[in-house]
Image (cartoon, rainbow, N blue to C red; front, side):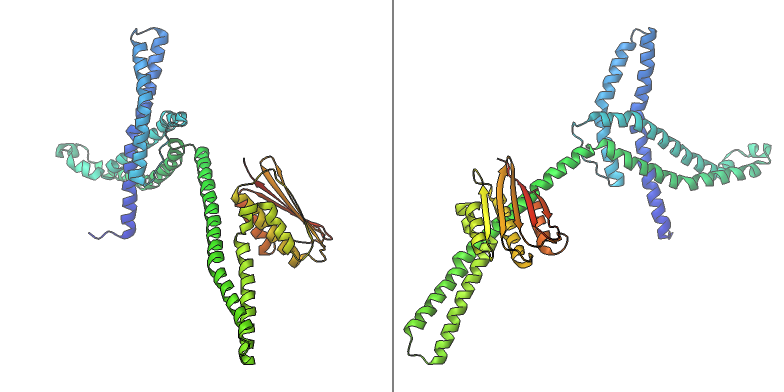
Length: 404
């Protein structure tokens, strides 16, 4: 028999939903029945009708407490096996949520599941009433001549009930998928806090890995390509001095090659300093920033007040922030004649302030330079603020956490 794909999918979904709900009835109503038993035992104990009621009551309460973890595991298996929803193991955190699910929400859901399954069975029985009628003895049918007419509305009612079952089952399953993971799994706030911790650790690892990679590239360039270029420039310089009997054209070629080699060395040195300056590791942030100020195209006053060295990651971020800020001032700060860089430590916060006396008007939302600065600062949970009113001055403030 060739069943249309749409009907096959509907039957598969209905089978899955009804199986899920049917398995949930005993799991949901188990503690519900115990609750009714406990209520009756409490009333008997208060009234003093049965001397054994306190003992049975204690046993019932113990059974409820002990069955809650097993019911939670069974519910997690039911969700995973039939719906493909994996509820994380809750551990021992906030057991009152899971106990409340089994006692309150579970009892209500179990009642709804039982009603839905009863509607399904009743609808099947009513829709097949003609088959049931033909199964009864012939004498009964002879004694009830109008049974065919009476069976028609029953059949229609059964078909209507069967037509309503799929949508009701889907709605009830959707309700359970909202309640179950929320109450049977870990607390969402604790899960969010754990994810924040994991993301913070992974981000710190990524920052450290990127910094280590920059150091490796800087070391390889300094010890490899730069040394080769220095050797090449020396050889060309010696050739220019010693080979004086060459034709003028050859001398000019040697001069040009020597000049370009020295320019390449200078460019490579600037690139190496941009990746990770060696002076930052050897002498610290104060010396590295003083070197930046010395190379800047405008006067820069540097004031560094640090009682001790900072972590390498924080020093690197502070250095590159100042370097990029001075570059932006030199390129974009109109009419700027000087810049001030102040680095201070306040408790566990490193505060870096870069100011210039230009005409202002800088917009942090435009251009990639300032956005890159803000992203670099946020990579270590820092704060980036900028004030640049029209007419100046422009002030950039960066606060970086530096725990001891």
